[in-house]
Amino acid sequence: MISPLAPAAFPELPKVAGVEAAIGRAGYYKHERPDLLLVRVPEGSTAAGVFTTNSVGSAPTDWCKRALSEGGGKIRGLLANAGCANSFTGPAGDAAAARALASAAEAIGAKQSEMLAASTGVIGVLLNDAKASAVLPSLGAALQPVDWLAAARAIMTTDTFPKGAGAKTTIAGADVAIAGIAKGSGMIAPSMATMLAFAFTDAKIAAPALQALVRDAADMSFNRITVDADRSTNDCLILFATGQAKNPEITDAADPRLADFRAALNDAMADLAIQIVRDGEGAAKLVKVTVTGAASDQSAFVIARTICESPLVKTAIAGEDANWGRIVMAVGRADQPIAKEKLSVKFGPLFAAKDGMISPDYDEAKMSAYMKRAELAIEVHVGVGTSAAVMHTCDLTKRYIEINADYRS
Image (cartoon, one colour):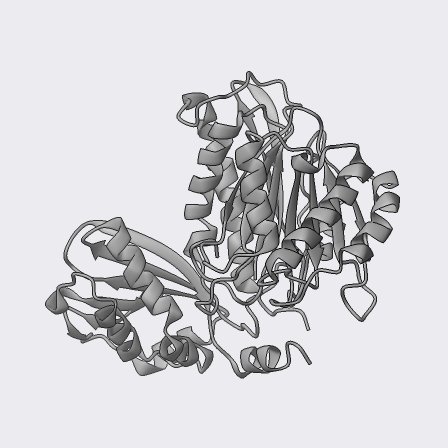
């Protein structure tokens, strides 16, 4: 069943010069579906990434961090699989990832050290690399300009719809394109909010500048969403730059010529991130939480995250109940500076609480009508400063429990 919050259609993403892909089935799922994505980018391409801060990590994320560091960001390809996370699998998992990447490198005519890996699926299951290696030669022969919709479908797990976002922009007057795909539905929380995201541009951007761009983009998008407060072992956002556009090479992320590109990248990544929340397991409500009047940006973020991750808040939203007392509770337990006597809570345009107590204009009928909407906005003012933060979350429904109770069945 497709999420009721899903976009009407997969977007038409721009062509990114130099990106080729092939999609296949290694058989990591019992049912017939694609589960393998092979990507090739041209020589001279750069890449950068941010990865989960979960201390368990995974074989593919460990590999990527080493490859990007040791290779100076010079990357030729990506191998991504769904159906097996290859996480918490020890040295055997590392060896399996390495063997699969050796096969992938041979298939695209690159070195193993120039490959990146990404996996998603059940934690604790060793990757059967032989399944991938068996189909990689045919995938290498089938590489063609990427079909973004097919690529997005190949990396889905409990997702109910494929996710994509892109933009056309300029750098120093030269046209450049950005296209990205992502997967994620459950086990989603900030600190590299299981989710995988891959973004591609044809801009010429050196690896150090690309790393700063991808870090900032993650902080303003994937690190501002939460579905269930659980941070996966495999999360990653990887940004590839093929260098095929005609812009002068950018070597410094602070270069003012990057302003339009930075804004376009951030917008595209925010779009992808919110699509993940729209596909939150069992979700029926998309919720934007804004905290204002905080002592610092970080304080505002902590308060917003506490509200978004409160099971009591999320279940009240699922029940279409404007239980603002639960929001006040969450604000208080965030352990951040607040002025209780100035605290206010709004649902859309409607004040539930104002100046530290129930609003004199509180109208239960209007509140109930507002809560029936599929997309909700909650704003909390804490009255101690001028800082603010925005996060997105979803409700917590019985369907979420059903999906996760039966995940391995």
